[in-house]
Length: 287
Image (cartoon, rainbow, N blue to C red; front, top):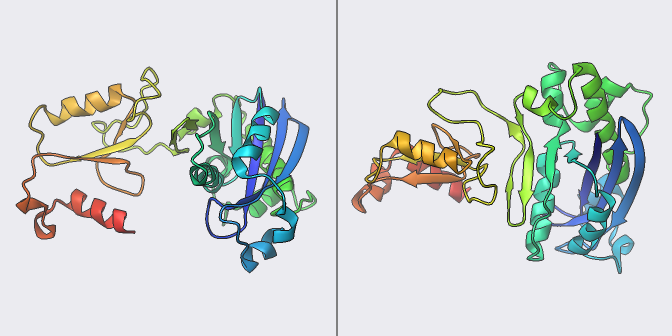
């Protein structure tokens, strides 16, 4: 299996402010290639805290290209890789998404997964699943790396994945599904997050219909319902969403993408008369 491990560093607290990217290419358990890019961040402002982590300063990125331009080079570099992985991929993929949004650029078309989520399943019981404790646990204290150097962190993520495969004795192509982990996916203007598939009441559909059109707006999205539906039974609505590749959940959480609101009058939309789901949705939107 050929895969790419990736890591981003940011100039400030904005997820769009990628100032460096590191990528490592692995095949059949071996490191094949590695590369680092310096990037003009958006917004182009460096916080002292971020500089203290990675050591990259404003002077280092003078004249460097923007992220979408750099991503064109990264795409060529990772060509032929069946998967992109990162440790704490939620952070890195949010950075990718926000950096592309900042420049009104389409998303790359990639499948990605998180070694932090996988480590929680393969080696349970660690006090923390950050990069350093997982490296120390899996690769030993003698494994040296420069934390927050993006190339070094990408190499670490790749080695973590390889070691997790060895310890689990699973196939690298199926290890994610065997541990109940949904592989993330980017399409040109949307994405499906990577994460654990939750086990809840059978009537709530948690599996993505792999036969669905990946370009459908509901594909890979989590949908909840509140209120009575006029045109169909709720069970039929569940099936319709699943046919589109959507995931049905019983409540509204940070993972909810759509809340379908049934037969509500304007009076009922007042805060005191809202359903708990609708009230929770408004609360989350305000956060």
